[in-house]
Length: 276
Image 1 (cartoon, helix red, strand yellow):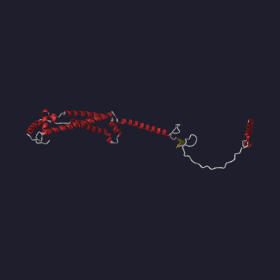
Image 2 (cartoon, helix red, strand yellow):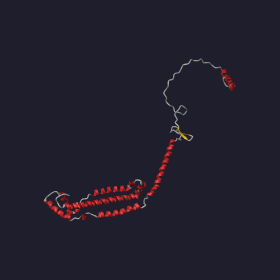
Image 3 (cartoon, helix red, strand yellow):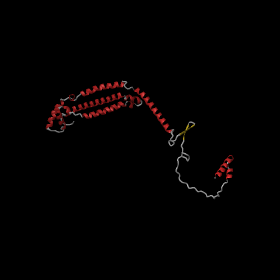
Image 4 (cartoon, one colour):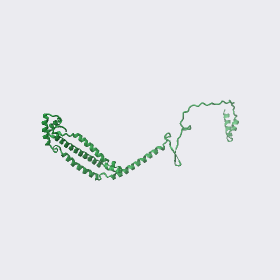
């Protein structure tokens, strides 16, 4: 606040007092919010959980406290932006508008401005920071901070959530994982071995002397085989001389038959000749 007028010095003193006041409010708000968030984390057991599972990593073990501080600082900053502190409304109706007008025209050297500056100097020097700043907000926040800190200490030392309680959860988790792995192995083995009647399914396994062998069947030309389309093949045949056809006498035919059946066959042909 630069300028030739003397009322700017007491106005600067009051402004700095208000800034310190707002800074203290922000610190108290950030602390209260951080502790409140950490108390909530203690109730749900997050710090105990992290300290149990990440004992070898100190940063991860205290990550709930770090996260609580970060969130508390961010929330307090948002609250500070909404407050928008201004020193002029705190000066009262008599000096509020005059002080704002004098501050806006502090670089002008006019008779009305000189008269206003003398009036503002006398009025601002008589104002004490404690008279315009509500210190009850600081005292109330400080008291609430003490109570909340005590509650956080009690929660951290209580046995609401014992870190060793997670040992049982870890054992249950390990058993569940092992059971799921065994089930996955059984399912994979059942999918490999085909025990159904579907001959067109996946290849089966043959067992010989307790050793599994992969067998792959290819379609053939036998019964039950699938026909395969093939290209026609032209073949070359050699011509042979035609022979004369000759009738074979029945006697010669009978002589070529087995001896034990000659009489029966001969009688058969005799009966046929009689019928004709």
